[in-house]
Length: 391
Image (tube, rainbow, N blue to C red; front, side, top):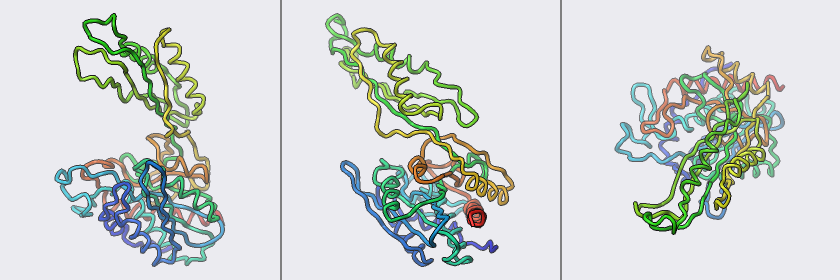
């Protein structure tokens, strides 16, 4: 097997130079369209719309035919850079210094896309387009945004075009310290909610003429905060609820507010479903509420179930490729937040593996150049192993 690869760092550098802050395409998808098109991929650029959200451009590129159909998923959109003067190297300049590539999206996740592109291009160059299966790229511009006009709709679009996927890798930065540390084989679910207590506004010196909502809200949120939802299991960390805001919108010292509101988020494991968790939270609040307390609970619609991938071929081939390339046997992890894998799991088995994530969303986001090429080598070894196992 040839180990020569297109330079992944060059692809990553050129992607970083595209200022694709959500929801702007910024030239990143145009760059990938040209890159994949020259290699013989069929490339579609698809724009989705929805009310109250910006239009978002997405890209689907595919080559080969039949099964297995492997798909690589990722996003070219990035979070804002903040004050560019705080960066040692411009956030969209893609500069390399002392073997490190700097720029917004270097690890989250233009670097992952670049490494897989380099691996796929090398695989196709060696095997040809008739390699006994199909490889696709599912690239969105809406992962860092509301995630309404991105992966969800692109998956639906691809299914309508007749594409049936057998496995997927999302190239998010999964490694905490060194390349090869961890593969994400699942994710905890996420549920957010708002608890509101309504009172009566009044003068702080005349509390009998008012009804302060704050003590009631404190009791409700203290009850939620005290719940031990579970102790975790061999697959997942314990579920945890965090109170993230406590607001009364009251700048005055002599006014009792009319309303108090708190927001919470819970990351939960597979011992819960969304329905059972909502029932637990509602029951806890109802038990803690005093009679006559005017309170309400609202669950946010942007929620997700937990999931665990059990595809031995996908996980085994990737684990073996990581170990062969780095000498490390990766941990199979379900920690961290959410990603677009939560949507892809409904279509095929999915895992996540990418670069070291220590600088994602930070000023001077960066990755080692050697890590980009090493990641490309891992992906390249994986493609050989996966298609051989499915032959």
